[in-house]
Image 1 (cartoon, rainbow, N blue to C red):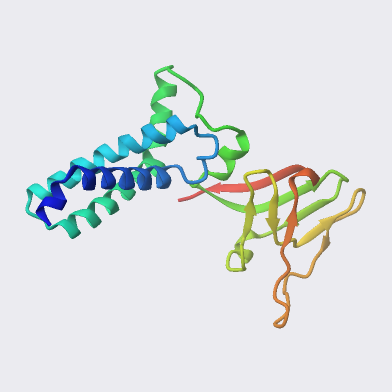
Image 2 (cartoon, rainbow, N blue to C red):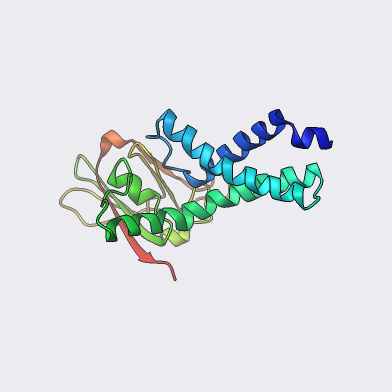
Length: 205
């Protein structure tokens, strides 16, 4: 076991596995535009931190299994910490120092759907034919399948429609109660049919 713990091949495998796990957690939802070089170097940076922690565990006399599992969990935690705090404070630091005002998101919609510090309370979608679809209170839909809504990376939407407004008319309520036999009705709206998406949001406390 000691030979395995200190072998180059095992440490390399652990470094790559932990590094990629941390990268994956840190960039959930924003990885699509990353290039191979971005993935490789991000994995290497997180992997370096994981290797340092692994060596520390071994130096303290921790056995191989515990050190490996502990290192993997810590690496994933590093990724989560970067996603929650690191990226946010780095963006602020770059803006305040005048280095850059670019947050590196490929589109404004990507920035919108990856924001975790707000609560979305209402969703409205206007179709290209002028029809408005409304999910009035997303809180009521949060426990439904795929609820309360899904905003796709390609601009498509999955939502529970509570009201519909045809051009020149008022909103008409829809039945959201569902049935015990058939369940609740959720609607998929392709991106090519959508002209506008409105969200009501409030800051999380």
